Structure formats: C-alpha cells, structure tokens
Image (tube, rainbow, N blue to C red; front, top):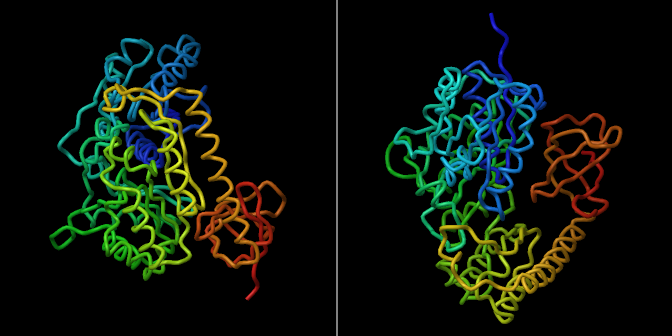
Length: 442
C-alpha cells in the first residue's frame, strides 16, 4: 500500500477561507492526501487566496515565485491556486506562472479530487465555474478527527449588494443560502468532535434565507434558535452582516437567545451619506445609528465591531469628519479600518482617487480614535466577571487562553483548565489586545 501524499495549504483572508481550506483538506483526504504544515514535505501546495486587500494578485505571484526552487528540485510537486484570486485571474495565473498546475475557484473546490487525478495524468487543471451542484452536499462528511472547541460554519455565500468597492459579487457570485437541515447536521457533527462554539459565516450572513427542513425559508434568527437546541453547543456567533438585513427577529434573538453571544460585527464603511451613496451601500449614517440603538435596547451590554474605508474616491475632509462623528456616537469595542485601494472591474476603480498622503493621514487619525475606544472598552472590563471558553495553553507555565462572550482574548494561570472548558473569570488587567484574569471559585 502506497504512503499517503502530503498536502500543504496556506490560507489568506477571511474566516470563510479558513472554513474552505478545512473542507479542501477533507476533500483531498478522500483522494489519499494528509495535511502537512511543512511546505518542503508536501506533494501538493495549495494557496487559498483572498482578493479583498490591495495588490492581492501580485502577492500571490510573489508567493508562487518562492516555490520555484522546490518545483525545480521536485518536478512531481503539484502547485495550485484556490479562492477568490483564482476566480478573478483564472487562466492568467497559469499564463504568468507556468509552475502552477491547478487553479480552482471558491465554488468548485469540491472537484479537487477529480482535478488531482488529471494532474496525475500529466495534465493541468482549471475550474472557475459556478457549478449547479451544491459543493457542500458533494463534500459528504467522512469520519473526522477531534476538533478544537471553536469552529466556523459557512451558511451563506455570495452577495447581491454590489458595493462600489467590492469584488465579492464577482468572485463568490450571487447570494446562496444552504438548507437549514444540512447546517444543523454539520453543527451536530462538529459538536460530536469537541466543538462548543460555532461562528456562522457568510459574505452577507444576516441575509440568510435557507430552506427549512419542513419547507419554507428560514431566517438567520430561526436558524440560530434551532442551533441553540443542539446539546453540547454552548455558544453561537455570526459574521459578516449588512445593516439593512438586521431584521426584527434577529435583533430580538440578541436579547433573548442565551447562546447567542453579545458581540456583533456590523460594517458601516463611512459616516458620510454622500460617500455611502457613492459606495452603493443603500443605507445612511442615521439609519445605521438607529439599527445600533435597537440592538443595544435588546442587548445593552453588546460589544460592537465595524469596518471602515478611508480615502474612498471623492472623499472630502467634511466626509471624513462625518465618519469620525459616527465612530464617536457608536463607541466600538473593536474595528477594522483600511485605506481604499482599487479593485479592477468595480465601479469605484475609475473614479477620482484621493491623494495617498491625505488618505494615510486620515487612516492614522481614524485608527487612533478606534484604538482609544477599544482600550476604553477593555479597561471597563477590569473588575467584571466574564465567561471564558478556553482554547489552548498560553505562553507561560500553567497559563490558558480563551475568549470571553465579548470575543476578548483572556488569559489566566489555571493549570487544571482544559481546552473546551468554560469558566467564570474575574478580569484583573487590560493589556494591548487581551485581558488577564483569575478564575472565580464557586
């Protein structure tokens, strides 16, 4: 019997790519591959790429160039590119980088075993279709190893919003929601393998409208309530959401579903109505603030996170000041902020660009405000008791690290705690990006 081949996967970008990489590894496991974390030991290298950040494609080509010596030394080594850059670039990747054997888009990775079989015959393989078959249904679960206490679970893919800066509708396609029954089955399987917290994923996750087990469409809130009945699943989160899809039942779930954690990532991108319109966001700063007000009325202690783009084409100083005012009005526990960068093929790419130096200065000021808010929220946790799901040992002897219900990283010295344990912790100190505490004895 031949030894199993080794698969090395490098993942870029969002949590959905992390989930996709896990499913790619599972698919290739059925084709005789086992995962390795040593690229020099691999029989196949897969780069699971993201197209959101600046110069994403060029970074992929640079990474591929680093594998040239490996390929020269081992001509039988197979190299593949997956994910959103693969979807966007397609044949161009193979043309520019001949050492690439395989290119597969994010909707076709269930076909990886077939593509690998073609590679074994000396062919190259390219698949960037949007196939009719359900890739999740094609990847039927096989017996799997025990998991850590947290996991991602994709429930929705694609986006119909067509924000002017975003490539997702072109690389991931139109919105598609998975049937609720299949999601529940996958969740139960994860729990059986040791998972205690699941984060539901989607490019626009709160637009979820999957088919219910007895017919009709389920909302994300109804799915969350069904998941809350899964024995052993203690925590539920979801990301990423659009303000226009924060439905009444989802807001209500934040107030009444005990397993839905008090953390919400709700991107706004800008506080200027003029820029929001140019972004095609289809909401205003005021409508966003009203949604936040309703969410906080339902769950007063909720920690809010957001996304911001500065230097969007045509953004003025007045527009930027509107964004700062919105941030001050909301008070974020954490946030992600970026300087605008063009994405070829998107409407904003051909508009008048903001001077790079001006955009850099705006980003610095915005991030300083967000950091100030983050530190204030973390400092407010000192003296409070929180519930921590422990995930792994820390750097110090006897130290364990986990996440609070508010998604803060928390570390305690607790030699008897095991990964997967949930315990009350009294916060004693706030660090730069984490909290320290002590176990609360009952």
